Length: 273
Length: 310
Image (cartoon, rainbow over the protein chains, first blue to last red):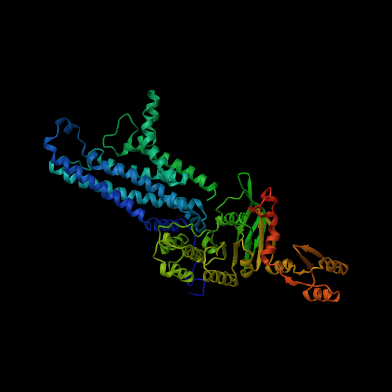
């Protein structure tokens, strides 16, 4: 056991700046096994299922009903798995990265080291969203190219140069990252894992479905603005002409997420940790 | 230096901390003493900016803690050793903390060494014993080479060797000129480590004094006598201006030594069965001091309410 407590290395210029806290959050994210399991499973299963379904589609193409062939959209089949699985996995991880701090009590250790709560919240959100975006770009473009390779056997693959295809592939990754933002904000607001995941999946999957039940033409209008109804248009090659335009819809979706994050930030600033 | 002024915290209709004012000076160990539920942890959390005060201020080094730019160099704190994510290894936990304040990575190995947990650095925290967790928390507190150290009940869960180690550590940190603020509900523990005491009960300040003063004030020694002629002895003592009282078959004699009592009895041919000096323990003195402000008091059998039990 050493008898000195003072360090030999200089610590005078050390500070809890945003870049330092972001690097710390990066270490924290990648020092938990759940991160590897969640993201690893997402990548492998998404691309794996894309391979399986495009391969089967190509194999059975000759026997496929001409009516189905006429409405066949290759991008739907290459991107669909990444989109829906991403929504689920990234939402769960988004809640966990913040609720895990509260459920373990680690938040008090973290905030003792970084008492500026907004720096912490900002760093955590930025690191998680950057990782979510990176992973989902790999999944989106990976699925597209791998899927296209199998569909090319029957020459039914899409090209990134086709109308709306590049936007939809990129948009898939952006949409899933947006789901991550929405979920992270709910995790920060509710602080509990179970409540956070329930609220996130409820908000992303259930509430938008309920919106369709709203009566009349104003109901349809309102429905277009509800969370994923607005946000998912960006991931569609043939965007729904009655819904919000892809980028407009995505902006509305981001406003939902950012709005929730602002509420979470205000609450975090006021509450006891 | 920690300065607390008018600090108040209300949880619902319960006043956990009630208008506390005190300061904790550098270069010594200051004990923060009070019965369970007195508000010690809440006060420490408010000093660290974890709990928002209902009223009042807490300053560390002259500023509120959440505007300090190098927080870990300012304060190292161990509140609850279990406040860590069990899924990380000890080293990764410390690495992330060090990085959050831009501290050099080499510092992680240094504090692991100081805390004596280098051998378990690569193990995940969830497998740690309470004692190992406590050492990890202390390692984290020392990372930033802080001016102020705060420990909440640090000896809980430690074995005798660990207790000795942490006492020495606190003494050494204070001797290096740092401010060391440590809470406990055990006076005997504080008597061995602290130089100064801040005593609270039910959220209020009861005493703010040096340990030496506390011991001097509270050492009201007395002599106990058991005699078949106790009444006669009491009369003789009272006649000499000595205060006496009956206590469970004994006669309690204040401010007189055993020799004087024994001589007096012999002169008057009074039989004595027992004669001894009884020193008030620090623990007893502490209980005397906080008697009216104990939050959770055990009811004596048959007592109508806990509050009346004495």
